Image 1 (cartoon, protein in one colour):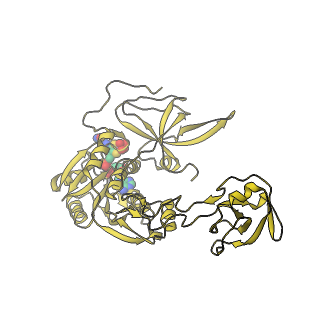
Image 2 (image 1 turned 90 degrees about the vertical axis):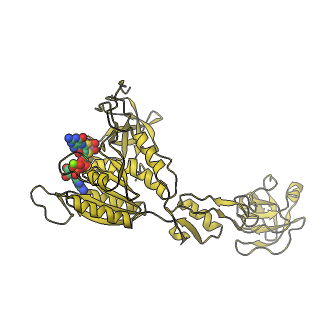
Image 3 (image 1 turned 90 degrees about the horizontal axis):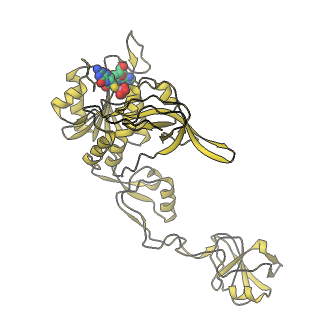
Length: 417
Ligand SMILES: Nc1nc2c(c(=O)[nH]1)N[C@H]1C(S)=C(S)[C@@H](COP(=O)(O)OP(=O)(O)OC[C@H]3O[C@@H](n4cnc5c(N)ncnc54)[C@H](O)[C@@H]3O)O[C@H]1N2
Ligand code: MOO
Ligand SMILES: [Mg+2]
């Protein structure tokens, strides 16, 4: 079992659940809508409900290749006269009268008079007649008009986050464009005298700016526009100017670095002077010095500089907030339970997001999810994060965990991806 220890909150640190709730409460969807072709709508959020102008299926049609007939005739057991064919796109125009049937293909409209389809495998067919080889039930293999969607039905509600399956549904209903919410534009900058753009030479003590590159990719993966303000030196004036530009031109700003207590950590200090701090320091590991606030009313997310901390706080705190700003609702995080394969070290006091690899194992016909920590868990260890497919989420008040314990995991991507 995870060791629960009494009293563990560290003074001045906000529980992550409170931090997330505060963000969700503080943020609103950005104003504005846009009409886009359906083909560009995946990932967008519907601004208004979509009503179907058609029935789906539009008419009764066959679910099988076979013969359309009258159920009353099937019961009689007599051969049926073959009077025509109905194809998808070329329906039979006549009427199936008693004693007759029509050859029908999957998706073809049911001819007038017919109410039942028999699969061709269950029929003895001659040139001009058929004989049924099995029993038939009334209405077999007929797909009813409107059984999927009725004309006038709401297909999708406003606020729906449009998936590929939603696009299939809308396209099937003949919808070519949708009105979606405007996406927020996110300003982004890194701070640090030591930071260089990947590709540039490194002087002694320099490192590459991996946070801005990764955060920009994460925002692009969410299909959000970015305003990239680059790498800033550890300098109050430069940070002030960048925050003011971000507040003027973007819907939110994400920074990395300078939110802790070092002598060159100016980001949070400038925010305090120029705007307002909503909260600072969260009981999470990594990511403790995360700061949230506003600069001239524009939401500000100050991520810690350590690269794992920056991405953990992005996914745990900023992503829910952006989801709300996009007009959708946050239903996460999606978690599962798994058996821990190796012991974990943890001190009570902060919710821990250790990096792990989970997989499904099957033994003696019994399957279970197991998870193994990736090894080094330092907030500068990017190889661990890159190898991981989940966070192992250890509750704030828990201590060490043993091999065999059941732990909560949060998948980072599909297990087979
Ligand atoms: N006395 C204390 N020191 C620290 C504390 C504390 O509570 N007391 N907290 C530690 C924790 S936890 C974290 S996390 C870091 C956060 O620091 P900052 O947000 O102030 O970030 P920096 O000092 O600017 O940088 C920290 C670290 O990350 C590297 N870095 C910064 N930006 C980038 C980037 N864009 N790409 C890659 N790496 C980056 C930077 O070089 C530093 O190594 O503070 C601890 N200290
Ligand atoms: O909490 Mo800091 O984010 O570990 O390195
Ligand atoms: Mg610092």
